[in-house]
Image (cartoon, rainbow, N blue to C red):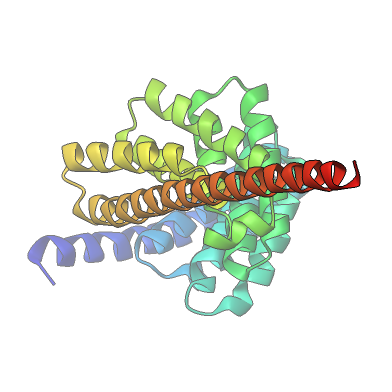
Length: 294
């Protein structure tokens, strides 16, 4: 641990002690709002130290105070903070995701539009990690609605970007492809407006995968090429290599598709020629039979 980290740790521990004294003093003096702020500040400090369980305990005390004094805004903030910490704990122990869902659901019930947007984003992320792609998609679509309601370009970009990530490759079984394409194209447009290059390359990758699923190899080749170009400009080696592989596969599929079509055309042409010859022979035979009868 560096000297700076040691210093910050010592300073954080001192502040934790100060907030504990402050909360106790405010409680005795009947200053509930200040007591609640002390609990909230203590929770933030524990978060910064990576001690999420202790942070949750402080946020729950903050929540109790907010409920008691009718502070709905503070109540919503507490629900969000508790839900986020349970999400972080859920990364190492998935059983905590149940608690995270509970508190984020309570958050969306009492929050304003911006808070509802955030709650649905968090719920969408949790459900996606649990493999419940339908609920994940539904929550991200709600988040998109609230982002549109707020006229938030950045919010729309986040919601659409998350929609495109739902379920990875399995998303195609969960959402209508045309609908997903519409979301991704909108995400590309927003990423371009925000000059978010990584979002642009990701959108082109998703569009390439969608077009490949549809068998439109001409379009998929173009999308993968654009993703490769942007990744190259950003020096994003990982994305560039994935785009390069997908570009090669799409291009090979395109050429094979064209080759098969050419073969089928030639077969149809040959069959047509054979049928024509057979028809001509049949006409000659009929003519000969007619001559014999005469």
